[in-house]
Image (cartoon, rainbow, N blue to C red; front, side, top):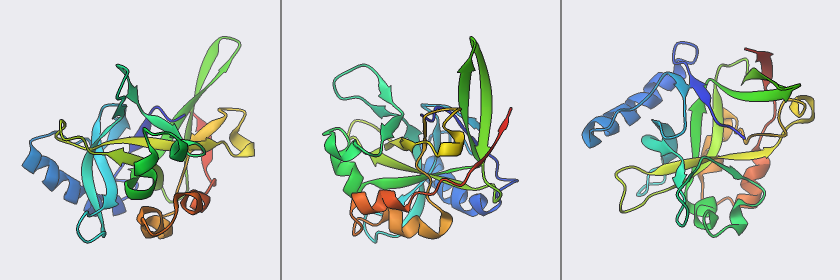
Length: 197
């Protein structure tokens, strides 16, 4: 599960150019885009997705959390192994894949009634969390969910799930609808470092 992540453009200056695209789009829509600090569900944040016309990657403002069609809840994560089998996500797995830029993400481990927070990152200070998005005619903005997978063995003691992470050189591959979803999720990497925070 991934229920919070962090953005730090000072640590990852490559994000700044990307985020300027999303900021311009957010200004036109009259919405407030969050580009730094801790990110929570329902925040509007920069997300990389293919342009609908030319299929080239761009950066767009999106809201974290799919509104569930039949229940009064927001779905912030989806299991990558079963997303394609769920009517809720099926179309997005092939046509609406996205990447959520992050500097780090958090998980909490519970032991003896105490919760300890761990911060996960990588040496480049850039993570691209794989996600799916939907666009509703009733909403001004698309919404996204972060895909999760079984945690890498060395971090499974903290939490049994982790985000599906795509390396920066595979962005175009992940976003391409030419690559079947089952092959796309094999692009995931697991190299993260962690520390108690």
